[in-house]
Image (cartoon, rainbow, N blue to C red):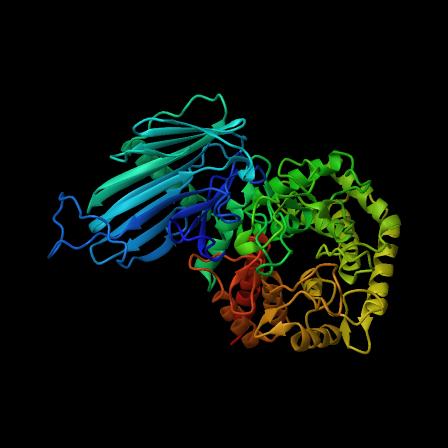
Length: 627
């Protein structure tokens, strides 16, 4: 039996640019949705080991037979008490994941990958390829495939053959096929198998999930899988070869770029916030949200990162997706934009509680959908215009029709910016006058003015400029606390908020301005703990939710950026290097870091990885200027 509920960070990510899967460091695939990121799960053992389903492919140590096991000689029976050491890594600069099993009698590996077939065309057919091989001695592998469709709510029927199994669920079918001597046996409506291999031998299992009624895939063979492995490796090497970054942190920046690509829905160019739903911000707590959607905020801020790294096609693809949201004519809540959408642009994300799932280590409720989609968050207009302005600097310049829609948005914003809203952190404690929301409204008008001038587009520059200046004056007076000597979370309060670390990044205030430096000092004293940054203090600013949370990794990397640009370069580098020690074994970050260094929240989180790249670029630039 696989170990239930491994730590969140004990996973690697594989994907095919339309959906993805998590594989634990013990070889258990315990999260997979199909046909898209935001579809119901096929395996969700990470959220409920008994009801969620999993696809394990693990090693069993075998009892020694003397001096060693000769090549071609069958290994002895499994030894449950023998020690197995596991290691997990990526094939360099790819999304091919390798889980290694080391024992005294042998060393074996499971190689996991998902072939990229149609990046730009939605498809209902997705494959997970799992190759077993032994590189020294002998090893016995044990497999269990226990799908649980529709978040574990739907039953399935099993049809079994010697080397193939079909799991028929409601509207979806999963085909499990084997290559090599892997005889399958039924275990209720699930299947299991064991296979003994010696050095140089290989076997494989391939899971294909498709619509019910679709023809089954052809049987896999060694030649086809070797070709798919080679093609996929070349795909990722060609893609990362476009990266312009050549700085001090090449490996971790490349891994973050690949992670951002894996979390982007290829057919529309829409990035999701994270691969999972329901992973908690506090073990046993209720702060468990569904992040498998496209936030205008997160995705817009990724545009600059992808452009700076040289991935202009990805930046422009999201620009096109965002322009489509303007063409749709507004959100159901009456605003021009909704804060988040499904990857195809559908604005309907009704939130439901999956009460039959126990949650990761008892962290309930588990939710699908996200009720925050209906919130008013004015900052998204700044991030949207910021993204369009960034994309406008690439060769694919914003067209006239798209500009007219952007200009109409800014005209609308001039009349509607001065309202309380729910803020960037999507708290459920009521609307307030959040400083960050006003900051990003300033960004929207500032970038709109710049773009209109740079591209000679028609615009009401007089009005836009007047409102932009009113916003700046308001933030400088009502968003500034003379008592705290700092910018604060919301007007007429003294609460600090790490979202304001964006101020120098978007050009609202110079990074060495006295007001900003004193704000940074105040954050150091109150929000920073050993270089890790909390979003805000929930006791000082109640957010309507029970429990606490860890430090927010996005903010920790933005803190590094702010320190570097403020001239505190050695402090910034030390904070950055410490933050990198919290990455998991394959370089991935969840949303938060807990009190004992554990990763918390949905995993992996795109926001964290884009902030990591932002911090690395700033640090490299500042270090290059030093003697």
